[in-house]
Amino acid sequence: MKVREMKETLMKIVFLIAACASVLAVILICVFLFANGIPAIRQIGVFDFLLGKTWKPGNNLYGVLPMIMGSIYVTAGAIIFGVPIALLTSIFLARFCPHKIYGFCRSAINLMAGVPSVVYGFFGLVVLVPFVKEVFGIPNGNTMLTASILLAIMILPTVVGVTESALQSVPDSYYEGALALGATHTQSVFFIVVPAAKSGIIAGIVLGIGRAVGETMAVIMVAGNQARMPKGLTKGIRTLTSNIVLEMGYAADLHREALIATGVVLFVFILIINLIVTVLNRRSEHGK
Amino acid sequence: MENNKIVVTYRKSYTSKLLTALTWGAFCLAMAVLAFLVLFILIKGLGNITPDLFALEYTSENASLVPAVVNTLFMTIISLLIAVPLGVFAAIFLVEYTDNKGKLVSLIRITAETLSGIPSIVYGLFGMLFFATALNWGYSMLTGAFTMAIMILPLIMRTSEEALLSVPDSYREASFGLGAGKLRTIFRIVLPSAIPGILSGIILGTGRVVGETAALIFTAGTVAKYAGFMDSGRTLAVHMYVLSSEGLHMDKAYATAVILLGFVLLINGLSGLAAKKIAKG
Image (cartoon, rainbow over all chains, first blue to last red; front, top):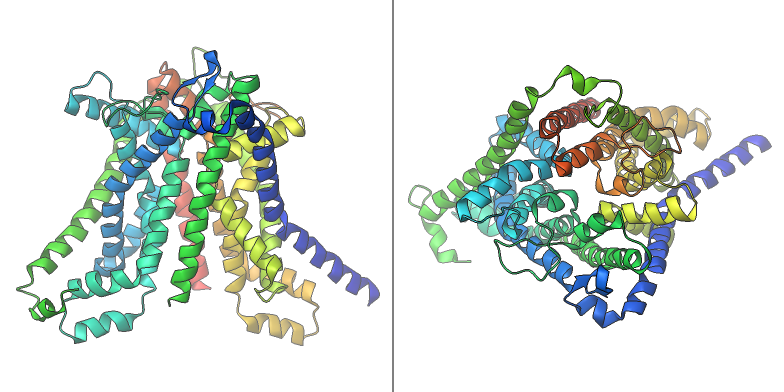
């Protein structure tokens, strides 16, 4: 009896420790990232780092503003191209899709979510870059526009997944009530069901923003990567994520720390976005 | 909304027709993009799959992908060996030992959610700073695998949790009724019934590791050789990135893309099968 009880308690502790692994991981990530990034930000100066417009490691100039703006612009582009299509697609899947093809459609979206970002990047490199170059008649197709289109494709499955389940979880009585009042199927869906799922839909979009900000490999392959302030849709751009990958390989000393500090900026961006998603999800659960 | 206009019948409602057409259009566009991507890569890539792609050694003239495939499998196995027990045990704790309330439980949930939103490049930086530098493991498969394990941990936790929750309480009660202890009930009754669900999480995790690039460049490195635990080695996705950014072996990049897509299709098929098994119960 005694041995069995001890075994029970012991295993409970093992389970508890396993459950705390994620807590430990988050703490370690925060500690190591901040401990390595903050000193560099201090040395460069908070304003010079965050608001400096020139990134020239050779001249000891580490202004990360071009990359912050690059990330914001590319993400905004991806949202403008991607979100309308993703929203309409998820409305289609939730309320318009014929029953027979629903399973197929879902697995197609899942397939889209599973394609590695480096394959998307390669697709962008060999298809989108020449396409943009041709259409706009510019010497180089590695532009902000190209990156935005590619990211719009990549965030589609993320946004569709969340918004569709938000739409599915709207009670049927809402839809039926609208029908009973004489609205058509489409009107009921667009004017009753969609507004009812609002906070879930916004959570999906914000999650998509998070994915777009954090995407690395695909953006590197198509965005041109010039470290200067964004100059227009058909000009090259560098994001926070690409800044890290491009230079980390050969960076040393302050340069290396400045790159880690770039990671800190990115991490803070993502933490804020995650926080918004959590709050929105909680609200949509309470709203049920 | 304009309620007074909703009186019109279906046939006469042009906005309804327009909106319906829009949803169909958006869906068709999304599918067309996916079909174009898959077909483009298959058509351009299949012709480039040649025997020398599968040579046993990688040389600078012949960018063989066999070492990368072996490294990918190796990396996947180690990271699953770390992440699966941790994730499943964590899920057991959350489902079987707590009533889903309390500060610790919500802290665990918040951190798991945070982990699943962190971009892979931040994992890469962390792995480099912690495993490679602080623990002095250098660029190695082990550094990469531990980084990957943390990355897929929330995924494994969430799917295992759902799988455990879907096991009916009557199973547990019957087991307790027959005099089994909690531990025995968990390992003999609950876990076996939850295996298909846990399996689908493991398959999804495999997909993540196979597709990951950014986090591995700074943790496992890019050496194109068969790698042991403490050696640097590139996985297939990293191999693909290096090939396409060098631009020397574009034909081989196409072929590698086909093989990566093949992996993804296989993984999706498998997780679909596992999901079907859950539905059957």
